Length: 207
Image (cartoon, rainbow, N blue to C red; front, side, top):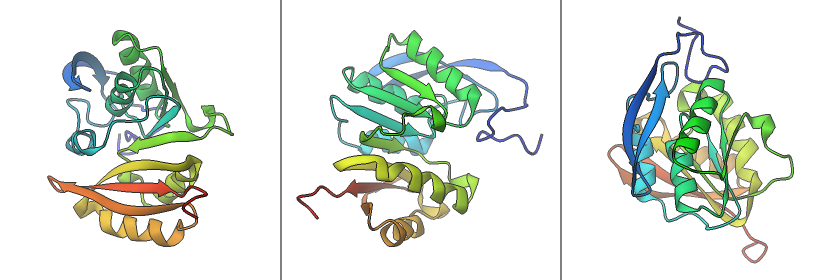
């Protein structure tokens, strides 16, 4: 139905599962996706750009994937940093179930797939990787960024991928204006019509 989006908390579309193969963090995996989720047939191009452009994540600490979908970013973080704790956050209960299933299938025990209110209040993150849900609209998107980016540890980075023609440059400008007290944002790279943005949380030494 028209109101049933991948960012719906409980998609009303019939659950149709499918199995795909993807290579994440150098490992080929058999993964489960389903109807009612974002890009169920493959790792979407924006996520692929992000995963190809970011530096390795921190080896330890709490790492965050905001808007995790069925889990390609989460699984890449968990595979790359097995001693870290990876938080996969989404409002869609269907994708959270898929992330848990895919993490178990990959033998990963360091993944917590939760709705936003399932993340402990005081937790701070060593990095955030995200292909944020641009199509939720500016007001909701801005709220997501204002919720999570200030929870970076001082001196840590968030990496966001945004399609150029969906407003990546205006989003960067908005963050540098509205969120200047929390992060400084720069364009890290451009590839295949996508921008990778780096948002750095200032450390006390930088201030």
